[in-house]
Image (cartoon, rainbow, N blue to C red; front, side, top):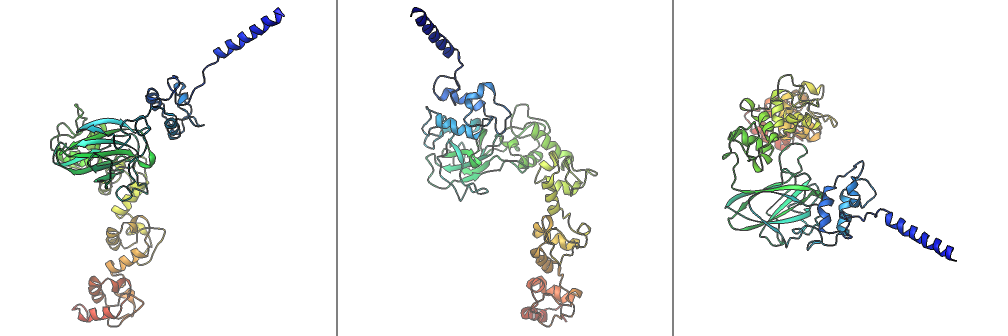
Length: 455
């Protein structure tokens, strides 16, 4: 009996030793392993966000995983919030997650995050409807008191996620429509997904700034507010070099303004290396992009290098600097086709302007094609459809003269437009396009009889 008891005790000891030797199992969200998910875990959790499609999770981030994949992304953020036990008034780690607890801010730039924020602001289907997304999701709140009377800007330019922004009068939870709402307004280049607004303000009055994401996007950002600021009029330094002090704007007001139209970050936050590069392209030699040069390639063909021929290239890049700073992609080609009429005249081959070409843009009468596309870009960058034909008939008088055959101008032709006296037909259709693009009816006959251009 004594031997048996000794064996049992030793087995129990082994079990106890084994149990205490096993590594602790990671509790999702408990980054500091103190038994709960609280503010102490929040900063560590944020540092682990990598998704989507990370190949492996960092060793210190095992507790950040809530779903079955290997990245820490939106699915894990939702899990963290569900596990969170010490949140602010809206149940997230952010004290200004609720509209009734905004943070007071003034002019200047500050870093922020909306990671983990809930959405408690109202849906804004009228002012904030961008591509079907009507709310400002994962919103956080700031109360700005205007430092001037005039125009204030609120900018999220420089943030690292797809932002959305609204500003309201007063600093209570919103009950009226926003003064302004923005989705992608930090410049004209491809891939710009940050927000910026300008509003009229009165000194001393409060304004609620609602910062969030497009379609529930979350991330780290940069909020900049300024009042009656003109970084170009008051700027200093060479526009083609970064500001040594980190200030926005530069010393050449014209170059500065042209650069900031394309990239407001340069006038809102700081004139950095990107701004200097943009200025170098935009402002060299008194205007024009460096990538726009003879021999730089055809503006009608995509290229992995930036720019193309001079005139058309500059027109495109004034609206989309990406085409002259990064690459001349298919979007740049489409802009060139419509803005520079690249599908008009000889490039259109045998596609006449009086017939629809539903899969190809442009037509072979260059002057007529350009006239139509000046009014309707679709005709030169997508397809020469029936509306383009109608426009050509009325603007280019394609149904006047020989094309009208034996249809004289003194008789109505209820199902056919135009008539065979070219001068008379053009005179009538200049005042009444219907007669050239739809039918030469009795009214057209009366107008012809009254015209001095008609026999």
